[in-house]
Length: 137
Image (cartoon, one colour):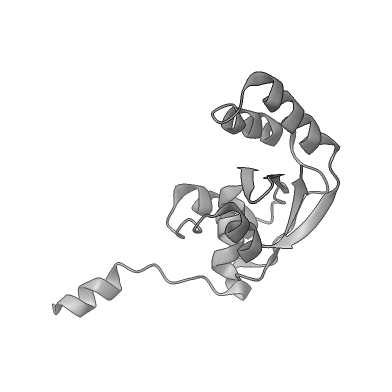
């Protein structure tokens, strides 16, 4: 088999939006996502700062932002479609399950996705301008 065909064989095509279905979101962040955000943020912040950041997230209202803007503000590339976390979220969408809004910490010059990187990546891979609900603390 020619080399180019092998190369194309390894590429995972992006799903068509209609094949994935409409992404449904929960009205509130799931409690376990705050715990996940706290675990992640504990790698970057001391305990007093961590406590303040998680409290800010809990108090924040849910807003929406485009997936591409969230990733750009965080300085992240989207995870690939074959990433286990992205696959897990795509499976939930196909099964009609509602996803939890994302948790983002706003810094002075950047943002940090405290929880929900794979959800943002999944939306981006389906539609880079897709809207993601999030709490911005």
